[in-house]
Image 1 (cartoon, rainbow, N blue to C red):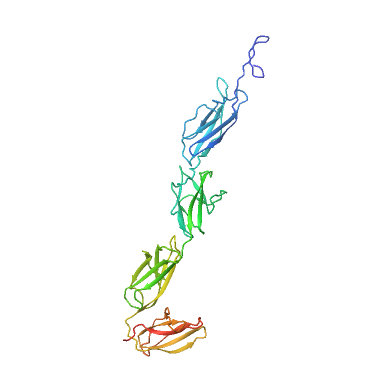
Image 2 (image 1 turned 90 degrees about the vertical axis):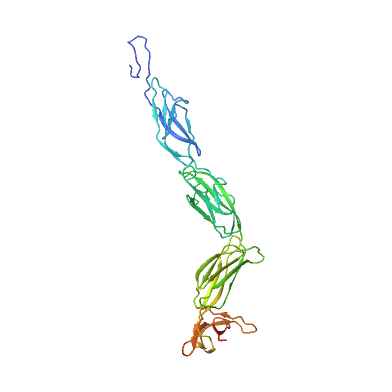
Length: 395
């Protein structure tokens, strides 16, 4: 054998050279080609300066959980995979054409995610297609999130039918998303799906229509006012559309007594009623509050419900004095029948047909001895007239 690795016969005799290739392929690596929701294409590469690599049989691919591909070419497609799933252990072994034994070298091991299922018209649904401006729209991902579907969505909410994605939009990876249209018109929830590696695949715009709600007006009446302590009083709220709007408001009315809710009732034909016998003696502020629906805005009304006790009837009812408190208020002193009950009413005018309104919190019992009682009023109006009213006047 000479220094070049060739076998030789004796000097001056015929001889034949034999080269033995013991060098493995170099530059062996694995890359990824086209990836879909159910397939991953892998690309093998490598070189061999001596024996070369057969482009049709010099590559053998493997991945975790699957049989090797066997001798094949520079590409291999793994199919039948699950969307939005990470597959691992991808590698390629490249062999040269040396005989009798080929030399080989393997690439490093890599992993790859399949793409997520792209959103379609039925992937995300809204709880309502038409909504009043300012109302909530709740969105649900029909098939959920995770393997076989989508890892997460990014979303945008606006009134444009198209959206330019920056991949910095808010993420949605579970539960529901709530949006609120701020003006009338067509609004869009734009969603784009991503797999676990953060690679996007498809987007869709879901539309809802926002309408400007019409105004409503609420009228509250009492079945008996004033009423005696323990009497069952019915409060009725009637909610109607403000012209020129038509239709009948729906939804719920919350009834409040002295700033505390005591009943929530569903409107039927625009009317809701509640009865109570639990109001305390005195002047009670009753409020009916309508929250609104998809077609009508909310509204409310209130009244002062006077509840009387079984106190003595009133034989005397007169103003005996007015004192200026020097702080914008006046104290009015009244003369009544001892232990009888009274409250104050006021009006901006006394002619020709004054409207007297009960003064909240003004119900008092005349003193047991002299029958005096008083109430303090503000002086914030240009003029205001006050008088006392007996809760139980004598016949």
